[in-house]
Image (cartoon, rainbow, N blue to C red; front, top):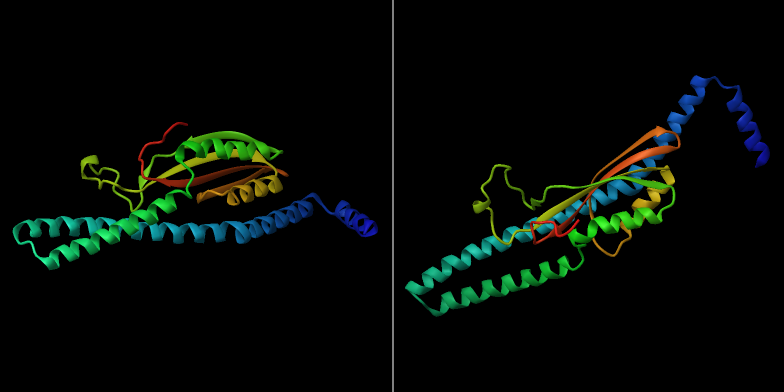
Length: 221
């Protein structure tokens, strides 16, 4: 093995600076391709599917609430057995959805804890240096326009809280940090990841992760 490594080193020493640079660029491209295939793509698919399920549940709750209001108004004018049974069914569906949303919320990390958690995991990973932490503006899951009146926003919505964290360090340390975040017992939704090699092997990375909450405001930072 040592002989093979020595031969390889001798061949590299004989190469021009341009050839060495091309080899390094090819190796970096292979590393990034493996990083994207093994980690980023599966996490993005998982996040997209989970958010779609939550949007569907939020829409169903709003639809059922509107139906209950309409039924209640009709009941006051003409109460009957069929209407009462229909209301009861809708109440059962709402209670079921509320229970499911509550169970799901227990798996989410509170926005107030997300900053400390990401920083703590990063500090435990030797070779990484924290550069910046930034909280992003909360957004209602399902979306609303930027200029929409606060009075017109639906009550009881689900809010997405985002956090951008920037750090520098080596490729392997960065990969280990991301895997530790993925292995946490709480759910974190990955939004974006940028990775730039400024001077090999040192690099700078920026990630945006999200959590969900029934509260629009960040509670502590």
